[in-house]
Length: 176
Image 1 (cartoon, one colour):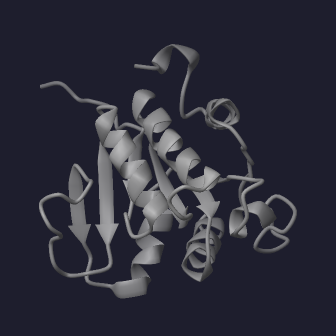
Image 2 (image 1 turned 45 degrees about the horizontal axis):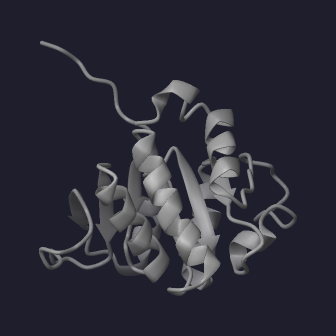
């Protein structure tokens, strides 16, 4: 019997509208994560998080989607595995806990709730900066004074890869 190691997982949190630079970076981030063998965790509830999931799948990666509903989504839902939790907004805790780190893209009220939960549970935060939303504010305004986990901003895919390496989630030779 062989035992396989668990792949790293990164939760993609946030929102950005199609056509925006943040939306395009969300998709590129999903692809990047997949190419490095990192499972993308995405609720696919916003255009940006759905785009990240779609690009991860297109790159041959795995996507775990935790959805608020208690019903399975349509067959075209962009995920390898779907968990319909039936918890509504309380599913934000599952999203925060399901990643070894949390990628934060823009975001509104739901995003900051996930960010605060991730912070309380000591998950590193990887906020996209320079594109608006909560992610822009995180490097200078963490959820509180406790310094629970690192906040590692990024503004390009190269910078994201550097931050993922700093967390030990990828090594140089891991890219597919």
